[in-house]
Image 1 (cartoon, rainbow, N blue to C red):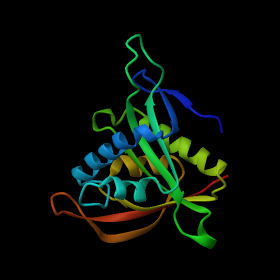
Image 2: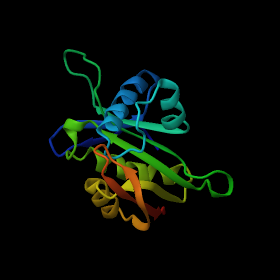
Image 3: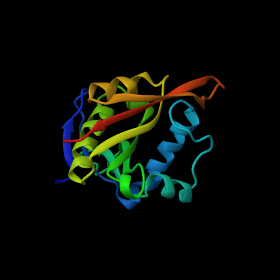
Image 4: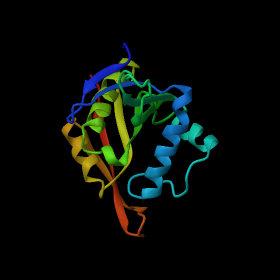
Length: 181
């Protein structure tokens, strides 16, 4: 595949999806820690240190969606969202991948998640994966559930009371699966 992938979002912003650059890691870690602090979608309870982030997010392939091009002020490109892609299991099962996604809170609903999801499917197939499996999609995360089902994922399981959300509300987690062409 040739990167970056370019897309015009619903709000007219032109964005690019590319491999994460080393200088972007801290911005993505900070965004992930915001999402963790929200307590609604990721299993971690505490913010991730740089070492914890590296072990979790950077163990294989990591991507970002950033604003595209530079304007006349030459300000740096802004990170709008990010995802990782890695084998879900070792050895004989490493042809099944897993991915995790985050989007800046103020930019959710603009098409960034869909762009990342569609691109992830193409990238995963291009990298030789044969299927994608999400282990823990909290049943309260309706935008993710809607997105994954619209992209052809099936719910293959439910883990009762898997998550204690930010307000100690218990939520089941769904497992999603999709084969790749």
